[in-house]
Length: 238
Image 1 (tube, rainbow, N blue to C red):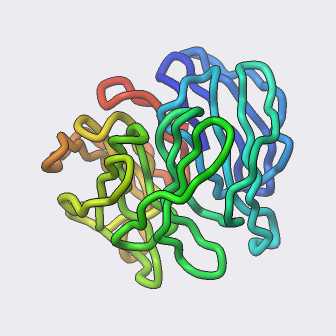
Image 2: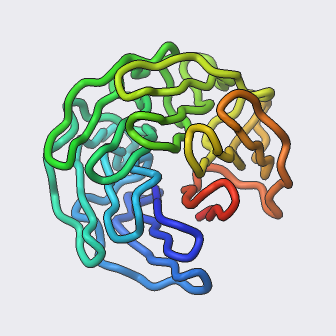
């Protein structure tokens, strides 16, 4: 999971129950204080700055130990906050530390309900039209995007927009994709990398203008399950 900008990025958590945090200054990485709860498949406020991050949910091995832990980063340390209403894994999110929204996830089933965080507590938000896990998200609490993922179908192309209370289906991806990343805002976003049928890791990049998708230059190295940050014209993949 991660957030920030191209010249001030933050990446945290990861496979093997990592609680690592690393900071990026545009040219090099520095290790930071660790999360209180090691996990992977966590959600984040993707549009938060490097100095005010949010990490929520996730899972620890053997892969069924779902987490409800929420932690805030203040630029120098992580602190535990109000837990999610539901322990879940492989969720996504968007927004900032004091106004964040969860996207999907998996508990004992694929989740459609989203939850909103106001900097101190979680409340139920609108239900997505398509439940999912392993989606990509970006934007703000009142103007967010959820893209791709999987549910009982191994890949989905569905894209939805959030207005602060409800979800609306938007123009779908041309190719279904899960484990991708995203950056930007609802009306100016990019969606990149991920895994497409039948099981191909890609570096494909697409741009979204709030209505339609367009092809952008591909990444040099295809990958999946990374963290995205920044804007559509100055993005960071971690």
